Length: 273
Image 1 (cartoon, rainbow, N blue to C red):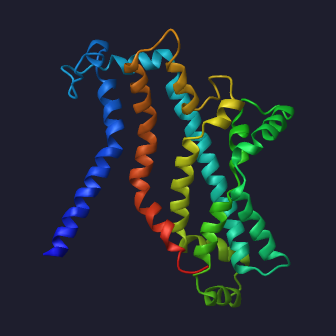
Image 2: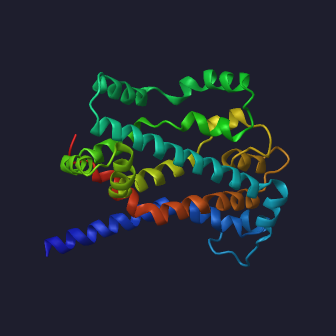
Image 3: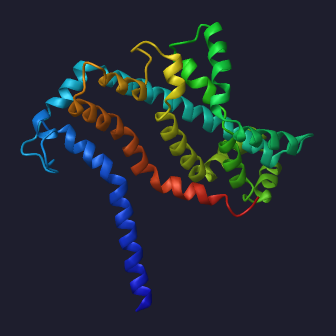
């Protein structure tokens, strides 16, 4: 009996927390399909009297949102692919190879996680400015190709793989690259998928760096472009909320379809250090 009560209480708490989490999104969706009169009426009705999709058309006229979404998707995909490639290769080296200074190098890589990203913004901006890479995909992608967390996370998973697999592969004539590509990567698809989902969502939400290195619509990302919907001359919340909903859809879909991999990957390497 007490077990059932505890389970019901747990479900109740989860439902309440879920509603609190989703409430801002529902509010934005509600305002996005209301006319200006309905949005500013008092008291505000949660269900609009009539659907008003003009806000979404107004967004497309106010700012090139589809272009911003495309830019963000390309940048996030490149960052995700680059981080997966570099992190997997580095984690493989730290897990299966023995070389001088291995532990020191690994500790130094982990130490970079304690350095705030904001502390390197000025130097990175000056560097990319001198190289003439501002307003390019390269400026948005290159600074984020390395991930200490990714190396650590994937290495922890590699450490639980039986060493006998590596030895058997070497006996069968499999070189390190073949072993990595044909055996290790397929066995670690869960943790790699989890890291990929996390990296994509994190890259999608970048704001400070894109704000500094982009000044043209052709290279702006959604987090910067959405601010163009609000200005001194335009304080209409309908189009603003419509724009927010439009840029939320891709990230929500990625999270929904990658939630299982994200949870499994975060816990898969936690049994061995």
